[in-house]
Length: 148
Image (cartoon, rainbow, N blue to C red; front, top):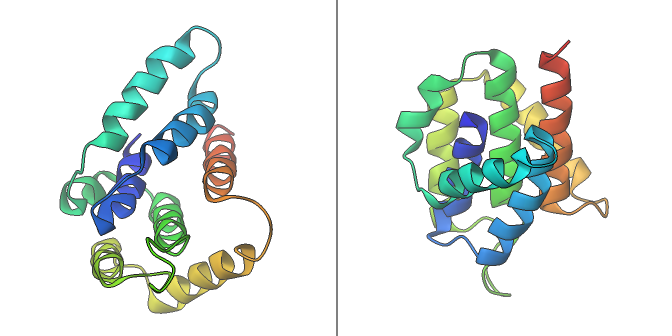
């Protein structure tokens, strides 16, 4: 859940989180954490997490492993690079760029690894997978990996 908090912070970087984005994230992410009756409860918890604009300084220290830090960086970068608010705006606007620089600083990852992770996201952005599907897939892979 803390991973989602950090990703949600990046989604809030431009000051808005569209209800449509929230609905899609709840549907996709809910299935990662529960099945059947538990999905409704998890969906409500996820909604609470996504709707809170928690400062990165509060969430980042709760990340426990290097793998979590790298996943958060990749997902954060993917979130801010995914779209523009208006057609003439760059993919990453000024607010998002500031938030991303702060994220990088707080994660304190080696610059070479940051570049690697960003390049991986940029390479994947050319395929047809949507943002939420991509994040859902990566979170699923992470959950399966830590469950081994």
